[in-house]
Length: 248
Ligand SMILES: C[S@@+](CC[C@H](N)C(=O)[O-])C[C@H]1O[C@@H](n2cnc3c(N)ncnc32)[C@H](O)[C@@H]1O
Image (cartoon, rainbow, N blue to C red; front, side, top):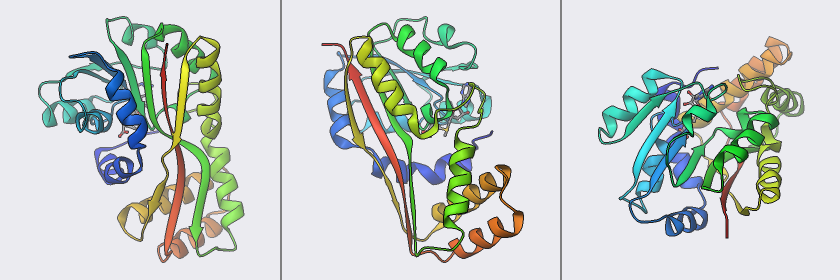
């Protein structure tokens, strides 16, 4: 599974508009002065840019397994530190340094329950802010005869292995919140849906959903017909959840 700069740039304005400002502000207010934050699966640094709107004194460590995305992050913000790491196998290495908080966005719906358990263990009480995890809701207007078939195949694809073991997909936030509470965290969540109008992101999403549905077994003809029809959709919403967790 690859995430290129073009796709991440296309989604970033929608991501920033969708983020819960309440959770972002609550996270920012709880940080100490000049905090050190590690961002997991940073891509080109979308979470860094979102947090920078409310805190400019952060010492960032951006982590990803894609050196092209990390190089782009560094080009855009030369002051940040970057670490190329496979978070599926080396989460402990990534989290071994001294940091005040752990962030991620559009990541934990790709991971397994075992990986989230490990993240809770390795977080060792540090603050956590995880934004834009897919929650399984996707509504397109107007409706189309293939919607149910395509969207249920897409959900099945979401639960496939993305390199971290079987993905929790839409169940990730609920699972993570429960595990954090068991570990003594106070957890806050808030919805952060994309509400998309016709345009390049909506078209790219339609192609991506149709492609995933085909990989999950939908006939090419049905998926292509759906994707073509969706280029004329009047709108689409995709559910996400943001999560912030802290001790005490
Ligand atoms: C959906 S993108 C989100 C990127 C960024 N957080 C954002 O919101 O724009 C998921 C990111 O996780 C990274 N990733 C996926 N698997 C990884 C792994 N095993 N180790 C480290 N990073 C990984 C990808 O390279 C990509 O940058």
